[in-house]
Image (cartoon, rainbow, N blue to C red; front, top):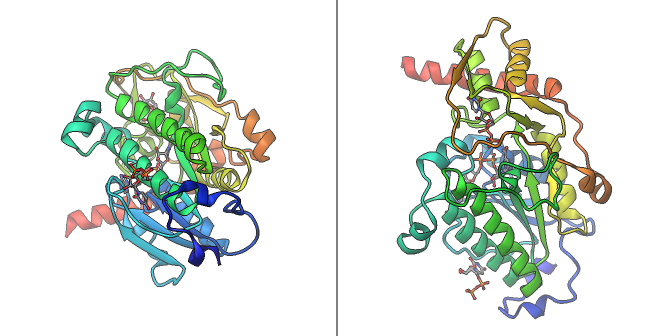
Length: 354
Ligand code: NAD
Ligand code: UDP
Ligand code: UDP
């Protein structure tokens, strides 16, 4: 068993010649950082259902124990409360590195900048992206594990190329409000490629486009969760700016299939993982109204700084090399998250009444 015989040498060349992690049919030990979050918890469901052992590392900054509570008691599942900014020692075959305070509300309240990150060690997106990714890459290097990083379409910034291909280098403001996220992920990609080229770590890079589904944070400020929660609560749907900006929305099960295909495939990437169906925010509001409450109203609010005008993935590379493409359209996917949101909003309301 490779896990028990894994070399503890810090000499990465000791990993040369190993069978690439993820290949073959045997049961794997897999770490999912950020596994108590929205995407992570769905990934954990899939990895466990495929018969693997899964260790979740999460500090519950935006994630919730409830998202993985249905696995408590399963001997193949382990949950570790840990901040990836701190080093950790584990022996595993694969690392899915998702940990990141990803939602817009959190990154606006908790931004931090590069200098704060390095010298004052503030808790911030940039710090998690840089130091957390560095630690997970150090771990991958030491134990010879395959490492997948969930980067983002935000690396393209406010794109001047449309749709975006992986070859596009992006148009990102390095000092703006959302820079800690965009630049943090760009740095994380850089680190991953450095460890790949310099230390032989088997890395995989996913650039994820806007994803939605059950277990999204209720109030994290993302447009889909905002609109769905607002429609259920009988509040107006808040459209920022003129609502003509576009996004491409992917259902979470499609993303999870793409992440697993990427991890198990032979290509480093980066790969765009997203649904090419493109919607304006006003069109999205219409789909939410059709799905939940046709009498819902719309309220316009000022838009945030540096908001990308449009976004749509070119997924040709993932189709060709990973044999992956999304299957669930927005109109099919939205109804699949409604009952989860309804239940959680109901529980919240009951909690307030107590
Ligand atoms: P999420 O906030 O639900 O999940 C992130 C998880 O990471 C949470 O459980 C959080 O508690 C945990 N976490 C944060 N900082 C941590 C730290 N320092 N140590 C340990 N755990 C920490 O967000 P999500 O939507 O599930 O995103 C998962 C990943 O996918 C992120 O890396 C995000 O950047 C990426 N991504 C998501 C989307 C999307 O639309 N959902 C789009 C692009 C990229
Ligand atoms: N690291 C970790 N777990 C490990 C191996 C490394 O958390 O099993 C951390 C380590 O503490 C360091 C980072 O990963 O902060 C980078 O490790 P690497 O060995 O590449 O760099 P070095 O320690 O030589 O600076
Ligand atoms: N948005 C909106 N109403 C909301 C929240 C967001 O119109 O209640 C807009 C936001 O300005 C942006 C788009 O929806 O143009 C997508 O925002 P989100 O934060 O979900 O994702 P990102 O900007 O990271 O793609």
